[in-house]
Image 1 (cartoon, rainbow, N blue to C red):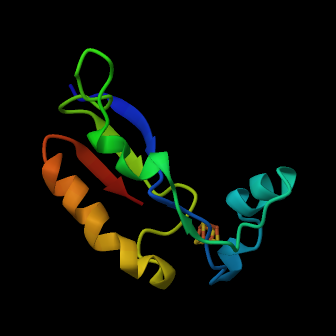
Image 2: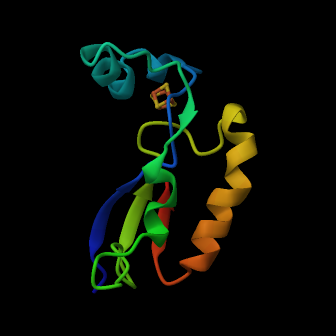
Length: 102
Ligand code: SF4
């Protein structure tokens, strides 16, 4: 049985593109923190999260775990085009992990 790990957010921020975005939770949470959900940026330490290891040298995301990707953005956002190849490469390196692109 595989275990659902948490979330990998290689970038943050999004473009509202449909009626379904009207009450976007990410925009709401950003507003609570005096931030603007329309500002799209590559996350700093978070970007390489699937490759990060703990002090014992083990991957923080263990082999066989499932992880949700881009929960505060859209993986296929045009603004993220320059970063996506690197993100695919990280996923290739962790082909032992199940990445959910929702
Ligand atoms: S995160 Fe989802 S709901 Fe929010 S603006 Fe982007 S696509 Fe719309």
